[in-house]
Length: 359
Ligand code: GLA
Image (cartoon, rainbow, N blue to C red; front, side, top):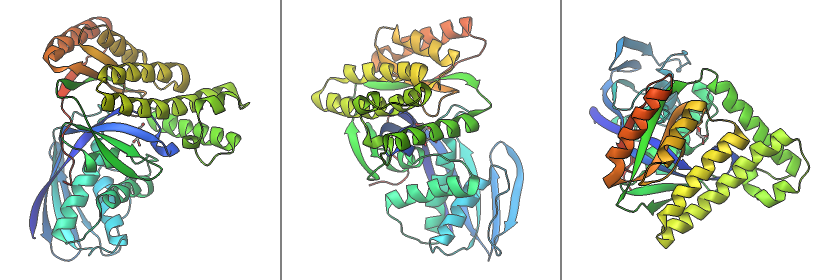
């Protein structure tokens, strides 16, 4: 193939906050919005990258290997480099990207950029990888090439999403399952319009605190500990609260799956709201703006529950809502928030959508 177009969706985290790098479990959904890559082969080792909304074309020569530049192109370059290391032909290519994901909303545009690149390059220079290997390779590009210590959640959600289903990801076994979402429910995503600058540092600090708690409990990862075990282990209060968020989230994910299987989605909503409370009390990764959005959303009729989604420290909340009431909920929350906060909220009603690589 000399020319191809790929699409990879953004994702929303439904439950299971910061569990991925602790070997835990997560529920997420791929969205109908994401990143499109139009790619074509170029001679030998030429690489050209461009993006809608960013002026100019980045031109590189990959004959001596690709190196980190500190710019947005590191995401696609990292993927190209990891594919080459995995044995794919390191041919020349050009890719032009465009996005329907709102900027800075915390819907994983970086994972979508990586996955869209991987799918396009694997078609241009035919190379076969299992779906989970694509997610792993994209995560490795972000960890080792871009230099961001994320877990597997974002890339796996973008690859494995399924229309009208939640993605259940087990980060210990690195397996996924699709859990049907009742058709009358929608995912209302509301961006707080506030993003804290220190996200990278705070994310890594939380990671270290979780690893410290696992060391003190003498378990390989917090996935191996229950909240009851944690409570009976002596450790500094701060580390214990960080760990309680993780053990609680893992437990809530399993409860939520059970509730969806039993046909009681209200329980999923309540677990989402409980997750947000734990973010406030234990993990301290919320903000006053996210708290305001959650409290406004959960007081609306037809909203089953709401919580911050993704890393935290700003970005968006996700609310589980009855579709027929979603317009009203959205309008009420945004109006009230914009009147009370020193920021502007933007809302998006989403449905769980297919991932980048069909089953
Ligand atoms: C970010 C990271 C994910 C995950 C979430 C929190 O989105 O990229 O890997 O850790 O935060 O659950």
